[in-house]
Image (cartoon, rainbow, N blue to C red; front, side, top):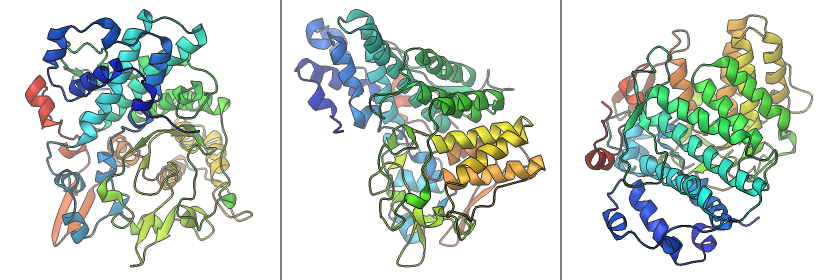
Length: 459
């Protein structure tokens, strides 16, 4: 289905005014002219439910504004010195874990999508038309998307969730209104996650069981996002429960035996494993010609593991590039949506951590049998819980590559001494290290936001 972009959906001149103000909002400018002018409401605001629904069809903003900085900083790939030197400054800072003011879109772009959602939520009670299911679907989508972007921001610009310090640690600036007069203020980690969880839970009763298109949210998508968020909080009970709820509603997996491993783009957009489609624009550092998959990670795939040929390509220089993105497009864009494979792996990890090895093995083996050459997969049968957890975490890393999930995993696992990992980069004779729980696991807030709105900068 053809996706219509924002300018094609909004038919009237008045919506250009909304767009301009939204852009100003996101860049945390004062938008003073807008506030002073008090334009006529018939020009400045949507007037029907169809107008609000149209905002949700702005795919490049609603679905395509997720940050990619965390993937540049993660440990699934490496760069040569020459390729590193060719990057723009922010990406070099991210890759080498240096202090950076983040003057690209990773901070600003998600807030644009959030402001679109706030326009919908603020205007919905005021507009006419639409039956209750349609109005509910519009509201549910806006809540889901707002929560998803707030969560994505929290993984970069706030510390990892730690129950012991969540009431004290600084979270992100939550944007819960489209009112430009409301000054952004950083919340606590506890308040940040409470807002994210509340939005997602509220969306469940409003969303349809099956979306019309996969770039719209649904009940399974909300359950899946809740499972992701709870896993990042190390709340394994709730992570498992919501993964179960999502899979009870939708559990399709692709058999990689049916995937053309020779294709440069092996997966279609909206493929069978996609529950909710979203992506991050591909950063320069992750182009196939530059990003070389970690050698040991690549070698961890067995000979008959079809992921070794489906997900990767051998470059002309012998290095390994990643091609297995679920975005369905060439290049370095990252799939950041919800897929069933992620949910099976959340279910497996939650189960083993909750002492249910049988359920963990069933979930893990159900996924992996679809990844191996027919007749060659030997199911895991590990009885030791520590070993089983190690196997689940390894398979999670291997199956969910380049989805902006690895950074969150590193952050949460660093809180466990047995799982903590020191990251190392070697560039032109220099060695860069990121110690577990180091300061650079939290990115710098965009300096414009700090200067204009007075937000407290991260150290």
